[in-house]
Length: 135
Image (cartoon, rainbow, N blue to C red; front, top):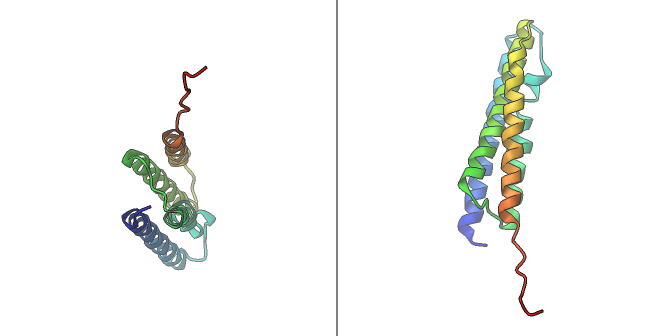
């Protein structure tokens, strides 16, 4: 593949790495000021953009593959963002000492967007079989 595809995927992967570092720093600072109360949702929120964003982007860049449709990439990015924000928000509520059923919306929306984008990617990369009429 072309180097522009590799550069684009590497750039997206580095953005996800930056988001992961920001979430790790945000979680650490929030835990310091939470008076000894912690939440695993807050501690591990950085892992969502790291494993769900950076690693696939670097793998695509290494393999020289690209996302065939911009809408697929936008759906996937939105899903990872929803999962990350949902993890942070759930962690904040746990540290505060309360729960809310509405946090489930982040998880459903995030996983839904990721699953839809993966399905669209798979359907867009499948090439139809061309049957010959030589029978």
